[in-house]
Structure formats: C-alpha cells, structure tokens
Length: 263
Image (cartoon, rainbow, N blue to C red; front, side, top):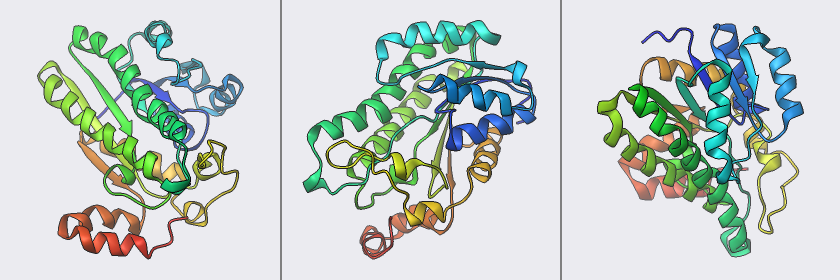
C-alpha cells in the first residue's frame, strides 16, 4: 500500500521517535499535525521539517481528556480530518514493584493507556463517518512480554494491545485499520524521563537504551509497517527475539530476561 499526501497526526512529536517520524514523513511530502505538551519544542521540530508549511502545531496533554474533543476539531482545522493518528506519546518507568507508589501506577495508566484510548475514541466517530482512517499505536516490546523495573509500564502497554485489537475487530468493515508498533531499545530520552517509585523522573540514561537503534531507523521501519498494512511490527535489535521466545516457552523467556541487562 503506497501512502501519499496523507494527513498524519503525531502525538509525542517533540522528541525521540515522534520527532524522527515527523521529519521522515515531511520528507515524503505528507501533511502533519504535531502534538506534545511543549509548544516551543514542537516549533523547533517544525522548523527542521522539509516542508514546514505542511506542519501544524497543536499542544496536547494526554492527562487532560476533557480537551480531546476540541483537540480533534483543532487538528482537523489545519488540513482536514487526519487520515492517520499516530499514538506515540507516553512515559516509561524504572522502579521495583515493592518501591512503587500506587499513584505512580495511576499516572502510568492515565498517560500511556487512558490518554491514548481517550484521544482515539475522540477521533473514531469522525473516521467512521468518513468511512476510513488508521490508528498507529506505538506500544513497546513490553506490551508483549515483561521486564523488571517496568511493571506499570508493561501493564499499560499490554492494555493497549487488548483495546486496539478489539477496535480493529469492531471497525475493520468501516475502513478503519490498526497498526501496533512495538519498539525495543531506541536511543531516546525515555529512560531519563522514566518515572521512579515516588513519581520523580529517573534523570539518567540506561546503557541498554543508549545502545539501541536510532530514532530515525525506528521511524523508517515503523512507517514501512504502516505502508504494508501490518497489524503488528516489532522494531529493535536482539530483544525482539523475546516475542518469539515467549511463544516457544514462557519459562525460558523468564529465565532469559531475568539474567539480561535491562537498564
């Protein structure tokens, strides 16, 4: 499937994978709506785009679901109703279960799961009325199997797979598609911004994260998956093998991850 001249709304577009995807799609001539909490960072991304005039800036906070209906209307005002919503925004975690406050789990679910679900539900009726649209949801390999220090993050990402698998079932006959992107280690600020047990950011990088693939490589591979109309795509290095190892033996996966370097 060759996608041309699409209107693509990207959340979490101010840095990392979202920024890299915005730059990649701008080079391809697509029209973009760039969303994140920091408007100044979005402006900097737009200036780096190959076609800045084809990129609109729309500040968005996934923790404020009461704004989502208006945000859909504002996104549509740029270039018409988006063809694709890329649910990319989120926050990770680095803390043991025993050390993690319940409020931190609530925050992880509010941003990574409920925020994404809420925004998707806000635009879904518009997709249905038009007779087409696509959700591209960036989860994680942690949406397919678990890892120490990421219990709440894993829970939220697993939940996204459950929700969007059902959305695909209920709406595929209305021209609505779903692609789940599951990155492994990508060289972004995700570890630095990850929540610790008391809710404060970790404030430092993980070695494993910084040895991951580049955001640019991730963006290229995820867009190829969208163009191929894939339901799921696993993007990363050797850690991707965990998906297949789990199918072979959950106990073997458990032992492998338990003795691996996960930070």
